[in-house]
Length: 108
Image (tube, rainbow, N blue to C red; front, side, top):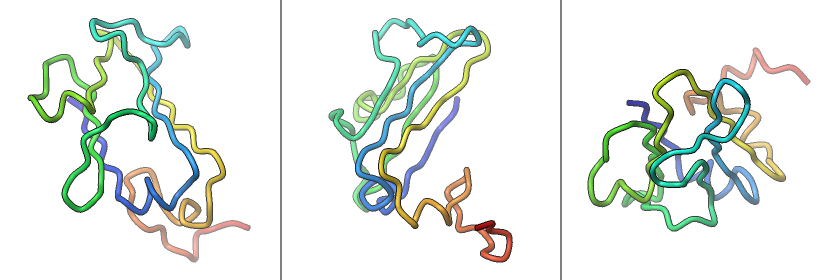
């Protein structure tokens, strides 16, 4: 199971739109039982009380509320691509885990 947590600031202030797409190792979108291979700000996602959002990438049903944020991966290897349109300065200071970067390591 893979759980991705997106802070409210990243979702609402990080870009004008975002999507997360699931691909197989042949670079094709994953066909699965849900017929859903991507999620984004236009989908009816479940948001946490603090405005953040968790996406669940797993084979098993994650539960009633979490089903809106569920991507079913293939049985083998896969990869995720996150697309952000019009990213702002907030995204320049966030690493893959969603933690602030050390500003001394940033390149201009």
